[in-house]
Amino acid sequence: MSHKILVLAGDGIGPEIVAEAMKVLAVLRAEGVDIEIEQALVGGAAYDATGTPLPEETLRLARAADAVLLGAVGGPKWESLKIALRPEKGLLGLRSELGLFANLRPALLYPELASASSLKPEVVAGLDLMIVRELTGGIYFGQPRGIRTRNDGQREGFNTLVYSEAEIQRIARVAFDIAMKRGRRVCSVDKANVLECTELWREVVSVVARDYPQVSLTHMYVDNAAMQLVRAPKQFDVIVTTNMFGDILSDEAAMLTGSIGMLPSASLDAAHKGMYEPIHGSAPDIAGKGVANPLGTILSVAMLLRYTLGKPDLALRVERAVQAVLAQGLRTADIFADGCSRVGTAQMGAAVVAALRG
Ligand code: IPM
Ligand code: MG
Image (cartoon, rainbow, N blue to C red; front, side, top):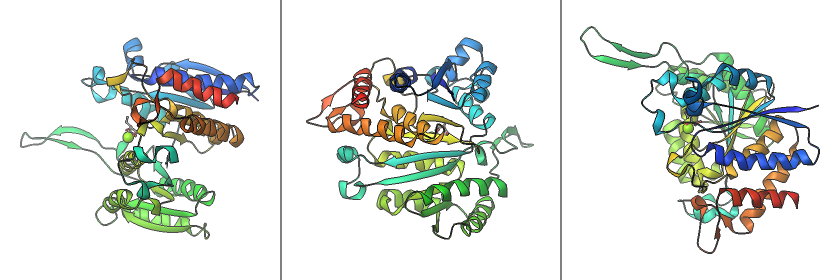
């Protein structure tokens, strides 16, 4: 059966890093993996061409695809647009229109990069945690929202944090299922001491946990979790949390590994259709210079192979190829260290392709 992959390069460094990931896909295709690739516009690039960050055509192709591979969206050029037209809306629209409620953000420290972390090597050595972030609900999407003028003439901004039991249950199940394949520990992160919405979150996660007696569940307030992540990050196996807390904690967790440029993510629906993207942004400051790190995007291809195509063996091969180039001492600027060879985006991609071909 042929697998359809929609590639959305997006903005900033998006096109450069996606080009390298496509080389990896091309190798697999040449080996007989049945994938069809289409490309479309999203984000600022789509806004410039069509007046909207998520054109109908892109949405149609995304719905028809088995998986979407996305580079990055956004940049200063579009920051003065109203929120509904900003590049980020393209991303948020894809997440919600495709029902991609489960966002998996692994933070894995490659031993070769231990010195790139801002934390002491002994604190991060061997770090391997997975953040499961709820992605289509919570304060990102809750209604009502907006900016309004009060009777006294003052404007006020407002957003709504809301989660239904069903939304909490399904993301909790994803987290427990993943924990079963890992270290069998889930830490649910909330602010149940202040926010009723996450009081319900805590209660529902605890009920779901009864179906997973082999998994140990703990709860942590988000402020403590933020602290624990830098104090003793190896205490975590799987963290499950709300959309906004997950947004924040996943950036923090990413930095533990030394480079946000290394980390992939998967956003899945109930049928394991998914959108895959590096967790870093569009890095407009280095766009077009050929220095961006393509490994986060290439590792996103590995996640795509694992979660949507159901090919864990190929996923592992791609991950090993990445590890091999790191072991060879190749580093893009963001992960450069003394004694290593500094390479650009395309050289890094080519090295992964060579390692993959073996
Ligand atoms: C992320 C990003 C997005 C988010 C932005 C670009 C809308 O920060 O994927 O973490 O907040 O979800
Ligand atoms: Mg974020």
